[in-house]
Image: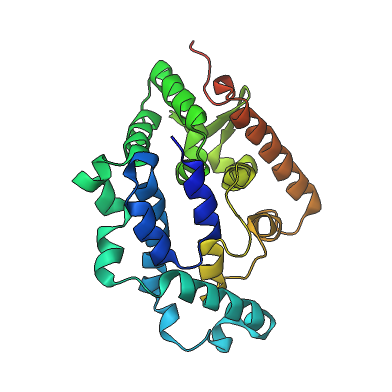
Length: 254
């Protein structure tokens, strides 16, 4: 499909609008799907009004994070500051999914089918969907899918299935955090320039060096043992995705 060309450009894009307008003209290779990802992150940022100031509010971000917040602010200003409100609405994922423009895009079409397939209770249908997803191997699609790749439910509640085991979500399993890291191992840049990390930095949530840093500090609570367990799950899931091992994510038919 040639999606890799958009991944590299998406990772390197500084001017988000220029990237989105270029990618939009290549629906055959999933360009509109990639464009809509930039647009959605910028639309989310626009709703916070965080870029309307001259610089991040030090009373919000804190003295210890002020320099990081300034860097994040400058990055997001360059990435998102040029879009018009009309573009943020028209080129977003929600509008794209329901429009004729979306039906022309290979990745949007594939993503729509995958989303329907991942909600199917039929295991054979689920197996086919996961196989298609792993064959596609696109990190931005997998980022959107997240832990739904392995999410199921029964009378006892929702759970994640991986490698022959069930992990009930009510137990807040560490493996859930590993799915957040998965796209990083497939080529998606997950450093401080990650749009959602940068947005969180300038809005006072927290400033992280990377998704891995966030997992260590927030999800593992600074506990090195828990962090190691999450990273172990991450490596195992990444290996299963790269080897396209469907059986790791779909329970056997009873």
